[in-house]
Image (cartoon, helix red, strand yellow):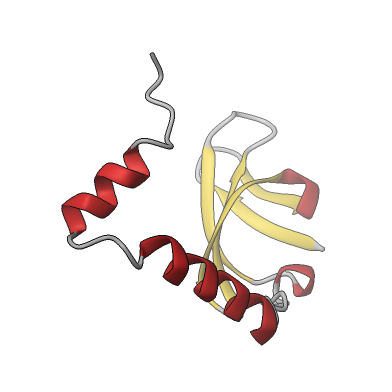
Amino acid sequence: MRFEVGCPCCGLQIMTSEDIASMIAVRKDLALTSFICPRCGSRLAVMTGMPSCLNRVPAGPSRETIQVYLDYFHHELEDVESVDDAIAEIDGYLPHGD
């Protein structure tokens, strides 16, 4: 994919998808894409179409998998009486970076 990007210092630059520094999805078909000018190093930001390879929505987990997780959490939390108890129980399993 080729992009024509105007640099205020160096003029029109031809970029490819390999030159993308960052990309933020604005919509399914539109992205704010930034490049680094190969001549002066300025960051250039332009609105571009979303590359088709990034336009696919991955399939989520199956309903059966979701139900397994729901059943697990229901079982684990059935004896918890308050949010504070739940946080205390969860906190006991998380590393504290000591």
